Image (cartoon, rainbow, N blue to C red; front, top):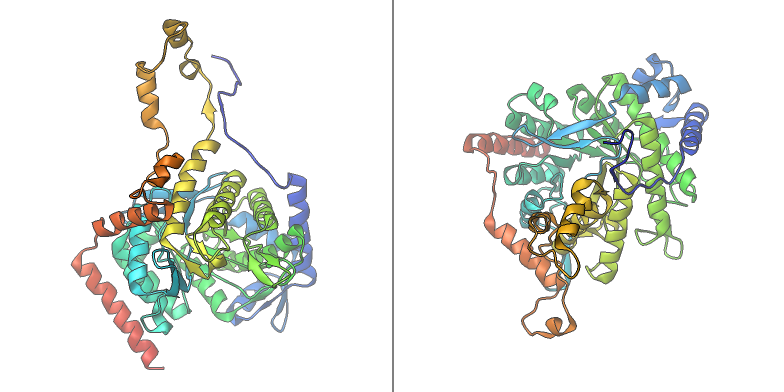
Length: 483
């Protein structure tokens, strides 16, 4: 044995150095101290004022020391559990996880090449796919369903998803009242509020109004989740040149101002409340003024943000793993793979837009399953390879000798079984592809989806639990009808 020797090294990548990350955080501290942000929730303003912030109407300015306290108070890692109470994945430095998009309004149907509004059936299918796909760490319905009361569509989506997957779930809430109903669903499944807090399998995403504006309801949701000790994913958008400066560093500063201001509210509500940092530094095509995922600048900003969150010791999330295309084709596959590879290398803890198309306007089965395949492929590349006595295979080489082959060696069989295998991606010759009954990639992806969907739920909930969930939905419907 050699001391202090490296036997396996993974692929590594860093956009910004520690000094650069420190400069970005320092700028965030100065902006929030000088300019501050609009806090549109009275309870949050009172919390901030008592903690020593300067409050002038809705404008709140933050002393640097207080912001640094909040960063240090938040946990540096979060473990998410499945609904059976088993650890599912961990958000920690250099640990990448991937999962589906959320709240896309439309679905692209690859079989008919049409786009339509999403339905409950789509939510069912996506939940089943998320449960079965090996590299989707959590589940969501991917879509905003259009065939229910829009005021409580978020509640319907969670009720649809929970019986179809045991994986942790990511949701969003249209209002604080809806969020309370959704958390109540999770508490029923967990057995109690305390059990859910100890083994959380639900997190919620909340969005501010960039730049430097935080909504009344969004802040109320943050404080509610902090009191429940449940994870929050706060997602400020920083569209380069629109809602943020056009430079990557400036965009990340702007979005971090939003994220860390909200983090401060969370930690003042409940020190140690789980928090997931996020920066969505979306690139903008200035010829159309549309957000696009088809630019390298989009990947640069998100990679840099991951470096800063790692410097701060906070778990982080980014919208990496999707396409700007409206169809699943070669361009979509290229964009998706580039985003997943960048996410893996930069160590983003949650890459959450897998399955999304048109920069999150729509989704597709083909895009989701292709993303899962690409994640498995790239994980194999970046995980590194050991160089030790076993892998060097010196004795085997000497034993086989000149002109021999290694096909019958036990090591060959053992290692071949470990190699990554694709369910859908096949290396085919031109002649193979000319065969009349040979399906193309889109058809293979759809066939894989049908196989999973036809198998149905693998982890159903008990009837008494389903009855309680339905009662919550009925209560929510009555609540919004009474308004």
